[in-house]
Length: 391
Length: 146
Image 1: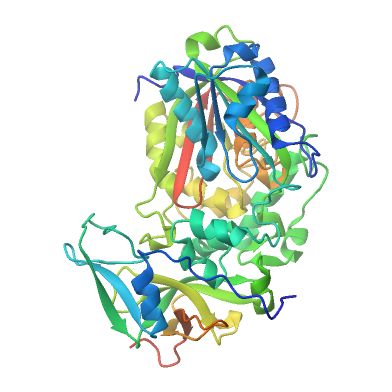
Image 2: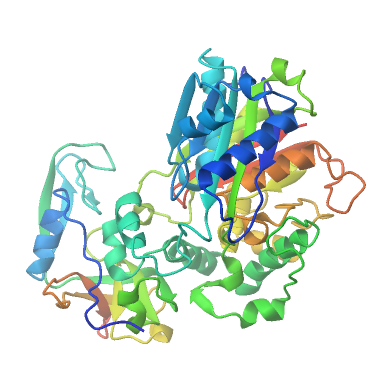
């Protein structure tokens, strides 16, 4: 595995416009995001020979995206990896390039997540069907009224919080921090929206322990990034961000997470030694982070799973401001899925790349002197993916 | 606001799960047990998640089943219309007494959300839903665990 470390890089990132109502097809947004990432890398569309996507909800086909970029892919694939897809597809791209199947991979995620197919934000008549069939053991949950990811993960959050003493204020601190970061990002959906602890605690519960602000935003947007070898990266336009460690997609010992003996043990507990082991680094080496944040609590459990803090210390860690820009571990610095946008985590990875390039140098948004970053993906508590990136 | 004619989702018909739901229709709990390692497993499936064993037997625990709440949620906002009249409702994950390693997810019936807690003893019941379907449910067990 050490042979792979730092031999591949993310060389381009891009996105479409972000809104609550795009008025565009997911195909058009995917093509726009892809063109943006290709231009960012200083490449031509014809340099791309591999197209990979996370295709769930209303996303579009990777062969279609290639078609409208005017290229013929040597390899294309639409995967369903949930919130662990971005890091997984980066790992897949490395494997494909390493095997000589392709040279430069475009990875995208496109969704009209607010105006089109929503993930659970309203009473979607199709949702219980997809929960029953997509979630392992789903038909032992849905008939009892666990019909959304919020409800499904809340069961794990409540047990974790009961065991560790994590409080609702601790969750609030995660939200407040990421809303503050969105305040520095004019492209964040909730840019300019401040959040106080009083506001947070006043909002009604959707399902205990999750209130309104604990749940990520829903947006219409596409994101894209480009992976190629470190050699090719040297001739690209930007400072290459090297991939030092990968955990492609690690699962807990049972696909139906509630059947795991300790349900507070999540995918990240298994991904962490893999991703840090490959990179030859430890959590103490990480300067800036992008934690999957579909719900605020998910950030806290990952801080513990990836070894940044001891079990039970994540809540106080967030409350002490460590996740803020200027803190010891600036995280989700564009506002995260909590307040920037929601593409199942790809927007968080794009922001991490930009931080490691020092694109915000001289502004309050720049995480100072950052060289090493961690991005995590979460496909529910049962599976995780992760990348250690290095400038 | 929910509509009275809206029925709640029922379990998808899966041949691997059928014995479990058929037993529920009789007001009994049936579980899979591995012939190789002896462990129970739930949800049921085509192999043993503990040892990979291929031979599994169905064992009935009868109609007197108790458990202890391991975790629970209180749903304040329903995302399916058919649950809209039920909010706030409780879904609990409870360890089944006498079947080590087995936890079953079900509603806690007849309890106010504020009365449900981790560690609370519960008893399994199999009420009929509109449409005649019977499913395992939990109810507060006033007598404590057996």
